[in-house]
Image (cartoon, rainbow, N blue to C red; front, side, top):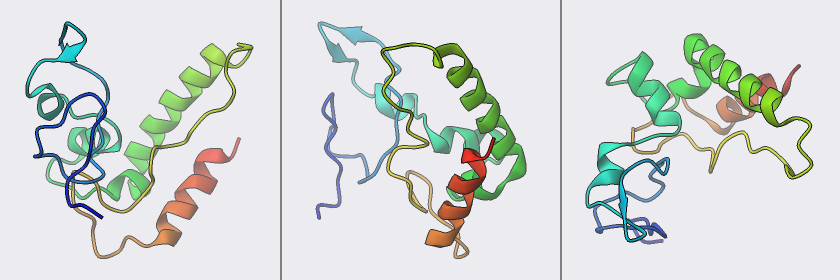
Length: 123
């Protein structure tokens, strides 16, 4: 597998494989402005950076403050769209894994993610 990720919108060859990003940024003629992905990282690592600057990616799965914040986000989105006939399904996270734009700790195992997913899915 290549070391660099391909992004369907824009990738200057500097993004690591598995880079998480929300589609935030300024668009011009349908293309993002250069550097917008690096300036506006999103996804799970945004939670880690907000709650624990310098922390590892897997804190998203284990830190209770992050988990509670994510649960509030999910509850809000589900409540808003629960009765919409156009929603087919909901994805807990894109490409769940121990490391992303932030490294993983040595404690992260597949069981860490499985436990998190089971917890998030409880009512």
